[in-house]
Image (cartoon, rainbow, N blue to C red; front, side, top):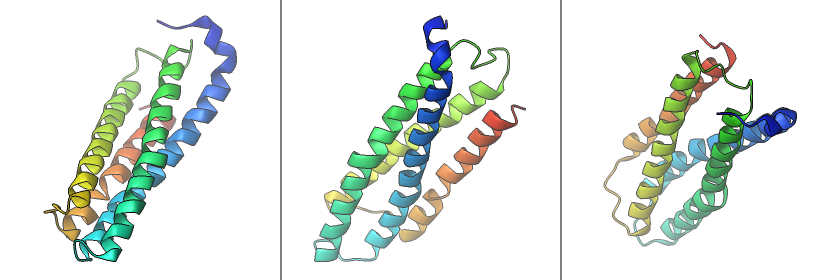
Length: 149
């Protein structure tokens, strides 16, 4: 199902979708790095309190609004006539990766709550590895959208 009235706004939808995704990705790249640094300080310390504020602000004021606007403009694009070739597999793979990226966002939120309650049990190494997940998903998404294999 598409909505013909959206066709004249395609380029605007696309522009705002890309802007939203860039903001979301920046947050998803930075938040695990904050967790790496947070692991290096003592729970209950002034440094830990500062990381908690930084993590909350990044997640609540940038990452989550950017994710929601990415989804909003992405859905508008799906509803725009001609934006997607429904017979091609690329968009399904991209959509799966976006679902996985959203799941990673949810995991970051859960891990932030663990730090907030001084209950983090994961290592710096875990967060360093987790930091690579959005990069891998982003590479797949960009290839699917640009190359459309």
